Image (cartoon, rainbow, N blue to C red; front, side, top):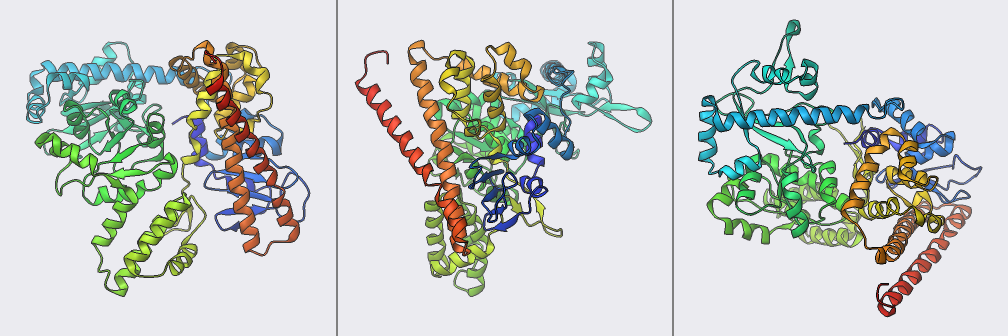
Length: 600
């Protein structure tokens, strides 16, 4: 997770904006008087689900929490970022030392990679690793598989790793920062991993971020992971992603399992699009990484209580993907590793039979209830209505509301009324035993791919700057993308761009530049691709704006809003006009492509 993502995750836009203007909850949104212009009727709306705001009055503008502070306080992006970071307790790289954080990460990558090679060499040749080699053999792992995943072994010693790495020039502070050693009482330190089978955990680029370690005896815990470090964040890591990325792209599908061995066995048997979540709950940070590779995700988790809970929590991931998540129902008592080793055709059949996650949840809830009784019907509705309420797509939501009505033999109208009464502001969850606490979704934080592709094109072609003047920074949903675009329009080369960007945004710039290298566009295609991205960007912005205006208008009408308020919202009809203009331009471009000259 980048420091900007961390700031976003810890910041509640409703709380921040509420300090400048009183907000009242209205359905799925909050509204109040616009803090940027004088008005008597509220036209300012805040959307917790997207962590965004918009004024439908005189301002006719909006954005996220960064743009709000920049506009309200008259500050730039870096100052807004630092203000929010201070509020949320996140440390940012210093402007005077822009390379410090990156250098620290590079140092930790190097240490972890050295440790991984040390553990791997021990597994291959150390007499002390005989039990680990027997375990690997029992799991039918080939030598090529062991080498590919760089499996290793940690000695049952208090400081074998420490002595090895310090002998190579690393300091004790380095090892503590990497989480490879633990500081005990009276300043004594010891190796964190001892007598375990080691699983290096890498990022998409192959950097070793940390380790998973399995006990080979009755030691507890059975599995031990690296602690949180500057590079190891369990909530954002996907095991096997470095080895699975190519297959995921090629097959346009990712299968998420639960354990290291599930991944390894799958890859050995030709299922190279399989990865594992770190923990039973799939996080939106993990899905955001996969989203760059595919939107077709299948969950294949153990059919136990923990797996079922992960399934339920995974429903919200569909909103992040803007696509349907499917589920494999595993045989009772078996995990993917068992199924694949027994019969690879069974695994293929399970993949073919994967069902949408909401249908899986319906089946799971219904299986444990007596739906002929009033109590069973009531419990089914109580458990499934919140699930249906999380579905953004109105057509899919209506479909599952109809399905629930048939399941419990209750009219849809009654269920719709019950659904309205159970809704709370998106992104807020009632926590048992406490007051309501913010538990915001992270879906809005991640960069839409077409935004990144557009910026990657611009970064390689500064000559397109003159053609980009009509685009507004708020067209970019992602904060980092918006900031890169804003600064890009003010400079003439990459060196100046990097220098003027806040240090916290430079890693994102590097990501965009890598994307530009991978997606090199022929010179004859640049203008066409640029035009396509530009229209798509504007279209997505206007579509989102139209949805929000429509929701705000419906809400005002439902609550008996004033004629003045309704009139202001109705003025938003110009959005529809602008969308029509975009569609007309797209049709014209299509005609030009189909009837144009070669090379167009």
